[in-house]
Length: 132
Image (cartoon, rainbow, N blue to C red):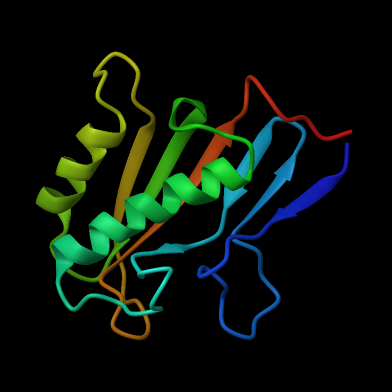
């Protein structure tokens, strides 16, 4: 199986040569998914805004990699602020079935450039696109 870079316009890592995610066969691993507006490139100043964009961006990365939210097995939340309430709201919206949610870990961590939250996810893609 070959590794494939997953690129999402607006989620570049500056000038660093890092894709939004990488996929090998059914395994998809994201890099850090920021809470930035992909169209304007702006980072909201508030936690709810960044969390909302981060989850929307996570969905975009998953889709670009051939995955769905149903394929996600683990999410790590890196937080420079108290984000739990906002994250829980988006979490329940993205993963509404309490019997089918991925594992999650929240780590308090300083983040660069005004970021208050960053997501990282691992998905095991059970349908659709395959790499050969």
